[in-house]
Length: 163
Image 1: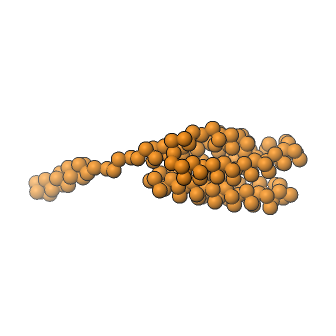
Image 2: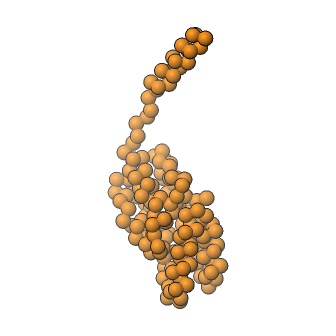
Image 3: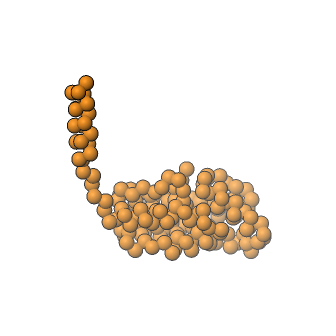
């Protein structure tokens, strides 16, 4: 029994001494962007506000390819913002409610959020499809870019994680 305990203690000591790879400055910067970004859809009350919050996110310390991916995502969301403006012009009260529903649902079920928005605004369905496709592609590009630096977008939230 003493031998087993000694062996376990030795294994634990060796495991505790293992070094971990240092965290790169790029990963640290991307993790900070992800942490900020993952709360945007929960804070925003409009798609325009999502775009504004993304634009105000500091990406200057991130690698250039990641910055480009983030800017591409802002551009994709800006296309959805232009649809939102058309919705407001057509029926502001309905648009306020539907955009709020979209953002509430987007945090937990992205696909359902887009489908519901299309159903409520059939006249913009083709534009919503195009914008959602661009957002999905931009999200994938952003996540892939982060992975190159060992950064992983938080699963629990945000506007980039796709369920």
